[in-house]
Length: 238
Image (cartoon, rainbow, N blue to C red; front, top):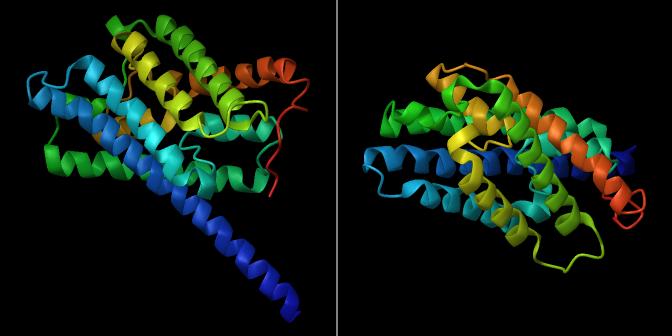
C-alpha cells in the first residue's frame, strides 16, 4: 500500500503541473495576443494589423519552447481534442486541460478589462460584415492548416528537431496576417471565449468552437494518411 501511494502521488502531482501549465500558458496567450489588439486601438494603430499578427505568432512560439516540455503546450481545446482522437493524449486529461484553458483565457480577458478598460471589444473575434458562413469555412481551413503543422513539425519523428515552436508560431502569425481582418483568425475556441464572456459579445460565437474543432479533426484524418496511419509519429501516452 505504501509503495502504491508513492507511485500514485507523483503521478497526480505531475498531472496537476500539466494542467497548471495549460492554464498559465493560455492566460499568457490571450493576455498578450488580445492585449495587442486593445493597445493597437488605444495607440491609434501604432502596432498595425501585421504587428498584432506577429505578436500572436511570437507568443505562441515562446510558450511552446517554455512550456512544451511540461504540458505539450496545447493552449487550445481543438488541439487537445485532436491529440486525443489521434491517440496521442489520454482521455482522462482532456476535460482538465480544456477547463484550465478556459479559466486561463477568461482570467486574461478579465485582467485586460480591469487594466485597459472596455477597448476594441477586448479583442473579441467577429465575422466581417456578419458573414458567419464565410468565417465558418475560413476558420475551419485555418485550423486544419495549423493542426497539420503541429502534427508534422511537433510529433512526426521525421521532422527536424527543435523547430516545432518556430513553425507553429510562424503559421499562427501568417494566418492571422492573412485572414485576421475577415474572421479574427481565432483557430482557438478559448481565445475567442475569453473576450466574448468578459465583454458580453456572443454574436456567432458558436462558430469559433465548431470551426476550429472540425478543422483540427480534418487535419488528423489527413495526417493519418501522410504518416502511414501515424506509424511515423512517436505517441505520448503517459
